[in-house]
Length: 116
Image 1: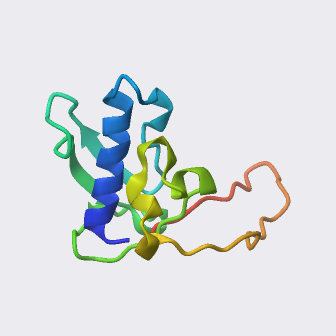
Image 2 (image 1 turned 30 degrees about the vertical axis):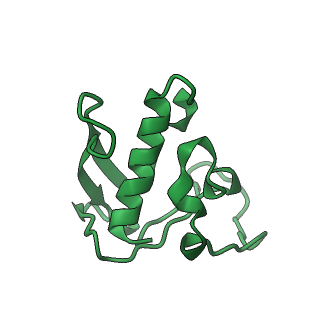
Image 3 (image 1 turned 120 degrees about the horizontal axis):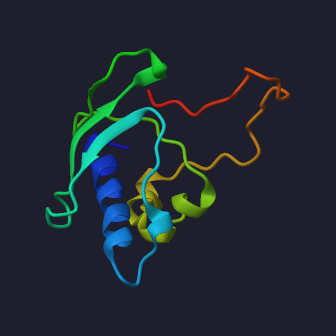
């Protein structure tokens, strides 16, 4: 997804949380992204300071609108549910079922999703 599409999907989720017919469960929780939210701004303008921490390397950088990023989500949100419509756009979907090979859980061994 491009940086612009990532911002759009986050804005869609925030709009869904603010909608009386929506769900507070749609609030965008992320890993490797950080951003500021101001609900007083209108829909589409609530997110600012969108940054990515590629590979969780203590280096944050601006999400660039034209740059392409790899994004991972579970099938519920990737299907456009809970207000995440941009995820379901055909050009954004790459499906890989059952390809995750997680190591056995051990204390201190926690898998994570990475943006790069």
